[in-house]
Image 1 (tube, rainbow, N blue to C red):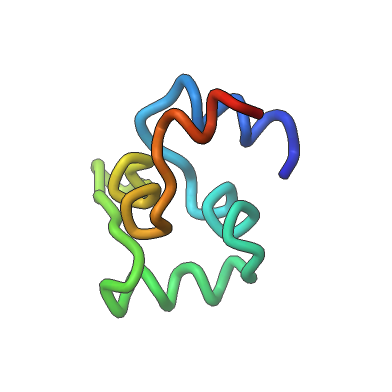
Image 2 (cartoon, rainbow, N blue to C red):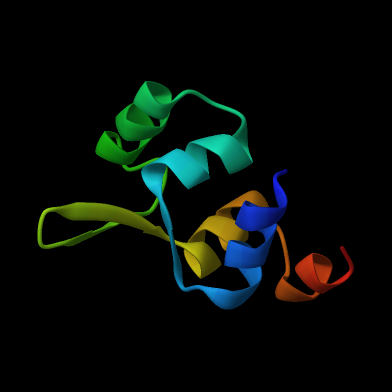
Length: 70
């Protein structure tokens, strides 16, 4: 996982769709499709679509403490 995204997981509340796709190892279009199918939690803020980190971590079974170990 690129350092930039790892830092985002520690210090930000949301990820972009591109960042989420990178974290999950899927394509951008697959990420949008999963969001559309409610398989990945998302928020629409104005015209932006973002993925809240905490619900994504819960979905993946990752605890916040696990991120601090890296």
